[in-house]
Image (cartoon, rainbow, N blue to C red; front, side, top):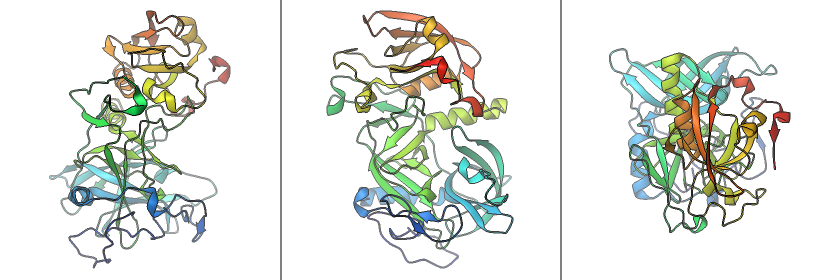
Length: 403
């Protein structure tokens, strides 16, 4: 971990949580040179330069210490008894009566690739190295979400997940005069707020990784069909930390970590919690879509390929349409239109839109938008579909127009 205290690996039975040193071989990515350690697929690693992440101060360390024991390591074990895929996870539920815990992690741990050995089981490792075999309750490769159930022989700590509301102020130099009000039921997250990513090693000393950065106003990906709900933190994490929690300054989980070379994207808790609630009710995964892709208007300035006049939608905020199906275009919603309401509820971000769509799968919703050419306000009714995992990004490109 960058700029954190390095603790000596303690004995197997311990009450403290070791923090992995920066040069530990499982403090993976950032620069460019690969270090090959052995034949396991995740043993090709990159080292994080110390200057990539912010210093973790005393208060942040106290927050990390308070929640660290709920952060676990997760590994798939092949038929030869070796660890195959490694990731992190976090405990979100624990039943004292049954001693059963629920863990969120990355679906990559359960991936099956024909050139590698078959996965025999998945194991979870606590902070002191105690390991437990896990049962898969849900695995969704679209959101990269894996839910595990573990029978523990002791009480374990859990983490508190909160939905986030992107809140911006006039002081944000990249955002002009736009002002977005926080949702009262969500935890407000402002651009520049501290975010800490946590992960755990699945081998001795089973140390905690913590990387610190800030919440970024920039969109993660400039590809219009690629996860517009994803959020972005400025720190660089490790491959082993994928699936671990992104926490705010209060130690609350605001999302699950992914990995990129120059930042850390994370799927926000808004998506995870609605996805999990939907699965528990229906047994299916929550992947709602109107066949519309886009970006938050306040993120568009970081999209180098999209030329949007600064005066467009002055004084407004919303979800900017970048790509739609032919059917949606024929209904009247087209590229560069700005979605401002859905079913009568205001829409300022992709997360607000996702929340509304998640509640209306299989129904028609009224979408109110501002037309790009004349700033007139119009409405259309569109169906909300639940797309099978393999089809979410594979719709025929001929159905779409890009600009």
